[in-house]
Length: 354
Image (cartoon, rainbow, N blue to C red; front, side, top):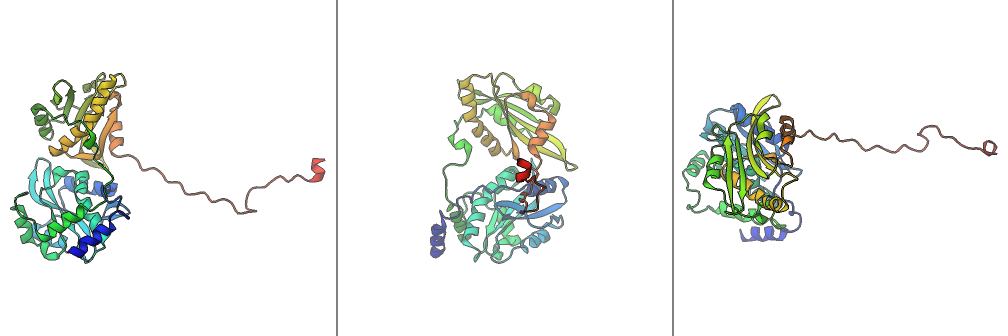
């Protein structure tokens, strides 16, 4: 163990500067969204490839949970780290709960161990933390992923129980990434707490309401509730102030690739006509408010944080294109023509020029 930590420390600072916040590829994000909505998928395997989290194989269909769990862990190969998104039979306000299985076996490359360890939390955050149970499963040996171990984990307190040797090692590797300063935007924000009404409204966002609007009270130094209700998507621009900045959470129900999807949006609107001091205040409070919503188990989509200076921009087409931007068409490099292969050229002779 001592030698292993030494190796990790020596690797730090060489090639690991981009090890944290590995983005979730669109293909994996869409596969997870389909798995949540169609109800027939038990688990998805995911790996890190080309600095992205991508699907690894097709989804596994729902069956007996114990047999499905054994089938999922059978995917674990020696010296090859991987993740499995496994659907449980329990539910919360966001639907069926999921657990992240992280396989980081002994003998795999040190850099990969660090990468998978430091990506686990951001992986869940990008997909939506509210979909996942608090306790993950992670380990380096197959006997740590038995059905009995899973059941023990569900009965394990989240903070008081002592960590296993593997958990200690895993957590140490996760913290050995190179830090380039604070990457979470709200670290530099002003920490204005949300009022009780604002907290309650956010908690009710998935229970009948789809619209919550907040404002900053600079006198009380708090974030206060403006309104919470159920509205049609076409009414969204009319519900947001066109003269003052606002924070708006909107549960956007729409169709994508032939499937109905609910996406939580965080909209920061700041009119050009707003006073400069007000703009600066809202700009610094923006990230803490988004972070507080995630702490309240509101999962924000990867492209679900939107900024506008005019609420009139918030049309259904604008929201849809923000969530699902079209991939840019890549143009190939045009080779220069070889000598003698170009078009006809005019050659001036002495006789023609005289």
